[in-house]
Image (tube, one colour):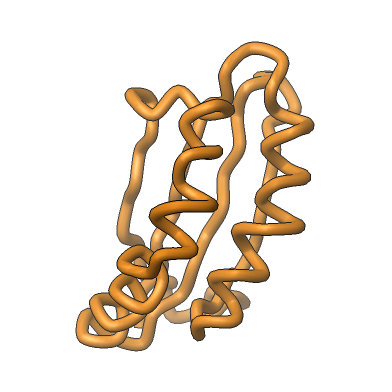
Length: 106
């Protein structure tokens, strides 16, 4: 099992809109395809910061879920075009992490 920690920065003045879009559109859509979203966070000291985390059982599962989400017409034609309006995509950071043995998030 591993986690994917995704750090985004919104364009100025777009964070509230982005959070609403994530919570009402992106996360429900991805969950409907089988993604496990562990958490969604905003920065307290940076008003452009948005971080979220997903969990995968294996690399094979991650690949299958990516395909199930990102290769759909809904994602390509309806969801993805809106992402670029709100995010500074050049600042996106994605890290794969594993929980330590005593982590409560396991």
